[in-house]
Image (cartoon, rainbow, N blue to C red):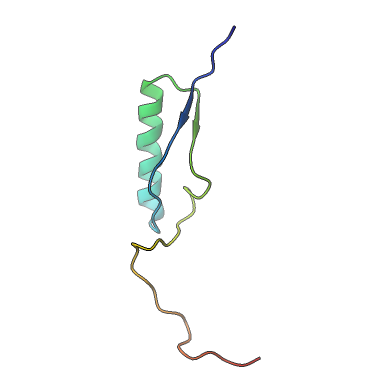
Length: 67
């Protein structure tokens, strides 16, 4: 019977795409050392998202407009 080694990555996403990419590479390297054949990341790992710990950015309009 063939064995398939799967690694599951649980990592923090940020709104910094480059930082997220470095995290992915670091997790891939570690998974490769452990001979994983598949590495699974959170679905939003490659999407820069704002989290509650990220600085908030102002809206483009400070006053709502009526339609």
